[in-house]
Image 1 (cartoon, one colour):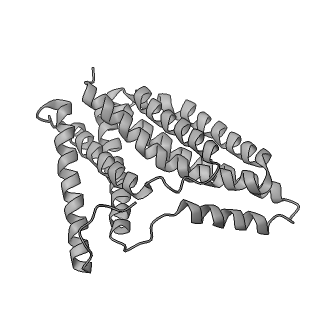
Image 2: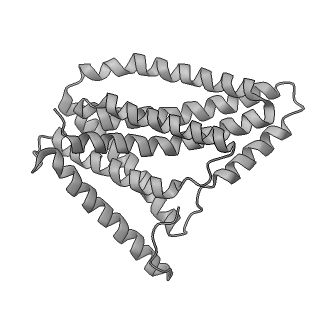
Length: 251
């Protein structure tokens, strides 16, 4: 039985990672809805959700057929790669080397593209396709995150609840403010989630090859601290090389 710290870290990782993905998908859906109407937006989104549900129903049960150590090793390795990709981009954005992702700019770009297509006979089809692609691509990442952080400890339900909470929160806030969630500190979220996913990956990859962590699941807290310190040190080193002031990660 997993302890409370493991459950909380699983839910938190799934929630924060899902917030980032849902915000990006919601931005496209909102652009489609306001530009071409809500029918193609809902149709494209609904079709994508149906495809995602089929993927879960087909491939989810297959995990039970794989030995748990192999699942831990494969998922752990993928999490390290996935988490470090997020962490690398978050560090580079915080250091100003690559541009911050701007949901307002993404919304304006998508809206302009849909507006240019408004006179085409297949305009509604293209709008629905944009919503479909956004939900499908971001949804696949959410599913991977939920399975990755939950499957190795039998906490998929908890990870799923974290992702569902993120979905409900983003939709609720988005419908109230009726605009892209540009105030969501996306880069900060990616920085934190990158640390968490990398830490989970290190923990489970080691368990997959038979290692026993001191303190069992509590070792995750120490791994989080070490990975966070390393990421912060790398960011600080980059900023010193660029002559930037030592400030917190800007989102």
